[in-house]
Image 1 (cartoon, rainbow, N blue to C red):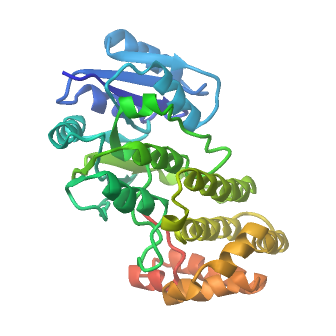
Image 2 (cartoon, rainbow, N blue to C red):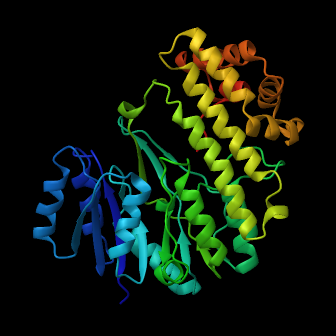
Length: 361
């Protein structure tokens, strides 16, 4: 029976940690190695981890200096001894059959990874099933690149939405041989956004067979209290680093032509998110306008907006992108304010889609 390592980074999640760990302990698949990586959590989590390890010999605890989610996962990979590995965020949890379902899919398909889908759930207990763009089957080498790797980077220009396949590492069960042979690791989310994407691009480039299974037993907890209205200027810098690092990674694999405008589209989506956070922040209007001007005048943003086929967007995003491209600072500001008003007044999903700066799943 293969050993499966489950890596759980832990930071400031005292109200949720037991729920997460118990969901792993109660799996129908029992041959588990549960690795709790305490990322110098300031609450009671370090002691909670140690206490749980005393009661379950499958639990290992790693205490490390604070370095963020990506590096915490890397610390877990350093000590993992399993044949397969799964990542779980410590405020989330999984169904009791999640591990067994993904493992059985890997064995049956003789695959290097199994990808599942997930269920979104908020503090009110409201749930929504994430609809995957993948077909339930085994993907061979070329299909892994074309149908999984490339859509993770971003959809092509004909796809309706800005996210085609969720890049989160917690969706999958990975074969450790692929990770070990290619020395795969996460980069820091403090340096570049979407740290999961780089790991998945690396993994799926080296994978020969990948299976998708329509299992929604990962529960992604949307913590409403964690939403901040404070603008973080480093978010723009991390988004610029995202473009640079992902472009370099794709080039190293010779996927430049296949990627086409996929990176550009994801970059523009992330820049729109940064602009949305900026306008919703507590900064003065003058400071917001200055920051918008800076973002729109940055060379990467200008180049991408000049080269991307903006007319392929739906109407609302096409209009907004042209305002960005032409650096109409005040118009960009008021466009986003309109969306913010719509959010606050609980406009219908159809109306929000027409405005076009909504959160992507």
